[in-house]
Length: 61
Image (tube, rainbow, N blue to C red; front, side, top):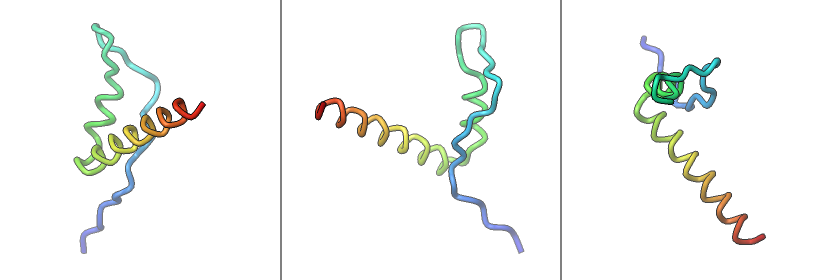
């Protein structure tokens, strides 16, 4: 029987950072490509939620 995929997004980017010739973070690209489409969406949504929380705190302060 096939093992069910883990739907938990991976949150740690591999280290050390590798920069391309034009300043592109190659490790970040590789990390994102290692995720499933659903994991990428979840990571992006978590990032967007974090930005919204930070903006909400800024307006309260």
